[in-house]
Image 1 (tube, rainbow, N blue to C red):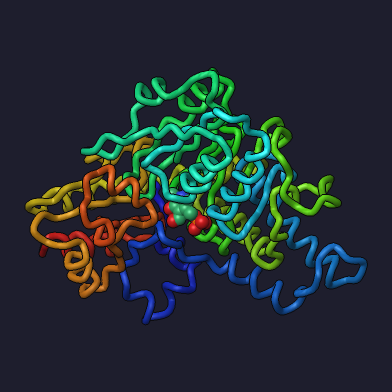
Image 2: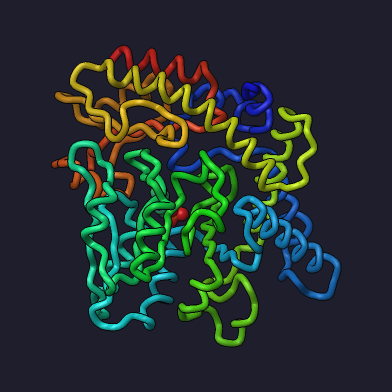
Length: 411
Ligand SMILES: Cc1ncc(COP(=O)(O)O)c(C=O)c1O
């Protein structure tokens, strides 16, 4: 089974506009394009049901139903109960609120493990708990590869560890971390496992209940949807934390850890991600599959297979540049690496390299991508110039990759 790229791209209005379609878009880890199914739902909400939802009149009932569709689709995607989801404005906001929910439960000397591989969203909010007596233990990357070792984690754990906060896939390194093993190690010392899936979710579907995690976070604006952060919490984990919503809303699912309140139209629009996945499923598979989570798994299996082949081509082209340094794994292998490829070239600033690629209508960026500690850990002195990041998702065509490979060749 091969992914029908013409079909996939026909679902994205951005590819029917010559001004935007001419760019080979490789900044997807910063924010992905959205299919028509998502845009339609957002438009519909604003046009017809832009009222306070869950009220007694028609438009308000419809608004609430549209939002429920969003909760249900995301719950299906993660194979969980919709009541276990909190949808905030971003993952950074969700981790911040989560840290506030953990804070009153800490005893002085309780330990929190953070990495220096993560985006700051899953580090800074935990480090700030030092002010309240928490002890931070840093799980450090290998300075050459950027990867984390389970042996190093073992040495940091103790019966004082309360949380292990890590990323399923770094937005710089691209390696898919062994989240099940990490979660088990956390549980063995009685700690909770908090997993950042922002750079994982655009490439693979997670069954949260089987993941071992206690808390899983990702952002729909990097996963073909509107700008939201999704937080799943295992009830046994969420129940131990201090709710952050209004005191009178404690019995309402979705509100306990969302002091901002939900973003109505965006939540409704997430249902479009489900409609898109189903359209892709129906186009590629003839078997009836009643379970949306299983349909999504098959669709993302196709995505990941295609992405891995293209990532291999990109890695080869980057490795062929004289003086290049590739971060993370040098081979593309399914289940081991996301198609997020970071590199630097000796004798050229990353800004210069990026500009050369952009001149050929290859959309990439350089910088620290808010993973400042990761770049420092990799020995980069000018973190602002940082690395060049190429991030591919399933809608990137082979022609996009051809153009990128040719542009890399010219370097
Ligand atoms: C790996 C990773 N984690 C967390 C975040 C933060 O997500 P948000 O922008 O939704 O706060 C990002 C954003 O780039 C990211 O790449």
